[in-house]
Image (tube, rainbow, N blue to C red):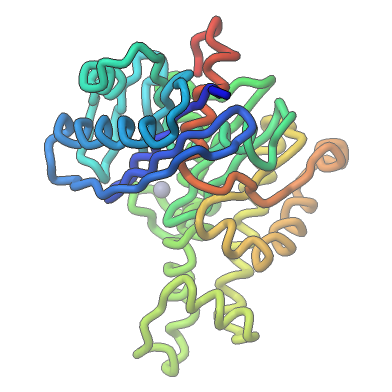
Length: 318
Ligand SMILES: [Zn+2]
């Protein structure tokens, strides 16, 4: 029997992932291809249109809509990618250009990748049934998304929940954004490497080895005290970020996702919970659970935009 599907497209700096999934997250087709960030935006959008056509063809079901996630802030209402640095995109009218290339009479929604990840958790993952929750994407950097009273929070110009650049320490590590002590200089891949440079490399034994985030986590797990210190600082920073989010939004759930957040969840969560508990009012803490992300692929986030958008369409804030 024909079942409606949502198409999700996760546009990264070097590749795009496509999925076709129904409302319950059953995947009918998946596809990944490469993106060349040096190409003009319109050429890349042509590649995306080809990928979308392919996944629709393979799924062989009627399409309810298309959700697209890209890095950086977006104007979700106008469908414009405001500043996707890795793709060299500034004010790219992604929805309109995609609609022109596709010539398909289906709605298209656009969100930034972290907000789409949050909605992916709400529709398909660990935040099913929740209407007040925070999603933290711990990857190379640190991003956040918040759902408040069932709605994703975009902010005045798409920068809401940019938690990676909240300064934890005005005398802390310098950040690429120009500020100092930003959260992502402690809790992210970048943060673990900055911590390794600060602590681990004070031991001459480690000066000549290649330090990767995987290496830091592995050394910490094996009890190396300097690596342990790096991971403990990262866990504490995660707890502080969670405490800020919880104090502002009083969520019932914080979902930890992102490549590093999912892979190192067990190494980070107990230290983070100690730092969280120490900073929260008891009633805020008692309402809150912290869990690992559940959505299985990155393209399920943008696919969730479709089901969310169809439900929330009259408010036009998806
Ligand atoms: Zn920063």
